[in-house]
Amino acid sequence: MWTAASVLVWLCVLPLTTAQTCNNANPCQFTGGDAYVKTAEVASSNGVLIQTLTVDISDVTIEWLTTQRRTYNGGFPGPTFRLKAGDNLNLKLVNNLGPQPEGVHNQFRDPNTTNLHTHGLHISPQEPQDYVLLEVGPGETYDYNFQLNANQQAGTFWYHAHYHGSTFFQVASGLAGLLIVEDEVSSMSAELDAISCPHNCDKEVPMLLGKFLDYNGEDETFASVQTDIGDPFTVDNTVTTSAGVTLLSYLTDQQTGVSAYMVNGQVRPVITMQPGEIRRFRMVNAGLSGMLLLTITGCEITILAYDGVYVDTPYSQDFIFIPTGGRCDAAVRCSTTGTYEIRSGDDSAHKPSIGNTDVYGGVVATIDVTGSAVSMNFPKTTPAKPFYLRDLQTVPDSAIGGRYVVELGPTSYINREKFTNATYHRYNFDVDTVQKKGKDQKIASQQSARVTGSVVRNTRQHRPQERQKGATGAPDQPSRQIQGPDPRVKELIEAGRYSWSSPPGLEATGSSASSSEDDA
Image (cartoon, helix red, strand yellow):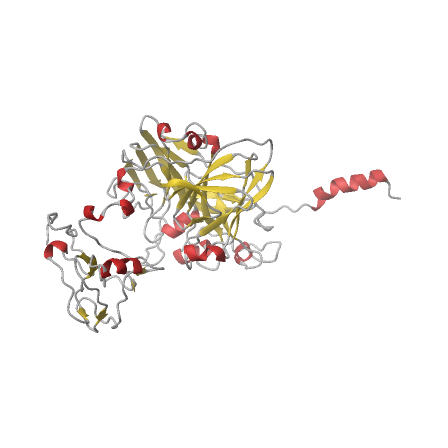
């Protein structure tokens, strides 16, 4: 006979006897839901930050999945560096990776050769600073000395591996980290100081967002690039799991597999806030191939900065768009208790503002709002920008000595032409030359400047040009009509302010556009 006591005992032990233990041999769906954790942070002291980043193969555990990745100091992702304008970052990059097969240019190659790039800093591109063509091979070490400009804009940046041939692969593996240049306290309003380091670091939510858990995506995935680049450290493809397939087959299957954005190496973490509390979200999209269009339904968003540059005045917006490699600082407030999703989606309402882009769809994190309510105010002002970030829209025409217009289009289009090969360029400068500026502002150079396809001031006509077959400098290029510039540029052309010049190999469809030597 069943008794109340026996039923109670049965109910208590049932979860213990039926709970599923997930691991590499017994895979299951990734659930997320762990508490949000900041990555390890290190800060400069007395103007200097001395660090060592060791690149090596490390075991990385994501919920139940244990796999091997290339990491910095064994972390996934790397540590967060906190600096101030004018600081020196002395960084020793140690490559402990092993030998590798020889690779082919313009393909995925050299998985064990690396370097380091600081993304967004106003910094020298030469050695021993941000020289992205540097090769730190297996077993080699390089000492970087990054000297931040004294006028460096405070903001959210990041660093990552940037060796050409394995950048995508190494960043997808986890070779990336946040780099934050902190504001001077005296430059911030009380409201901004209340949600920022150094006084209120607990109010900051640094987020390195990336599709680091990507096995069954529609485009190139981490698993497919591992195969292309010849990486031996793939997930186990020999042991049959409880599902009757190999672990790699399980992860890449469209029904059971996973393609998810992670936050600081976590799957859909939970960020805890109080009702009315404002937090400063420092977000970097290291996403590799996807754009993020984030919404937090039920909460308020105030935009503070994009790509490490403060907006002139903070403004309210119901979404946050971050392209691959982009950054955004946003102040977020949820006024009532509850659970709120930070969700990315291809929202048609925002399509006109972001164009035809590949937007990731899914929840990247949740906010759990609980506890007693607090009262906080959004910042209404931002710190002043350094001189080199001056808004050029406010510069009078009289202060502009010359113009060179570059119109960037979707994918690989520049000035409405598609980049097709490495030897044909419509827009060229000789080495060690610069474009001349204005009548009385000639700039000395080692060679005479040769500018093709440039926009020239003080000429009256804009005429479409047509490429002729067999034209000099562009063999075998098909003839085609060159489209005009952006309509806003066209207005200036029609006003006689400037127009396109005729590049070599192009024949004008009328009298040629005129220009003086000093205006070229």
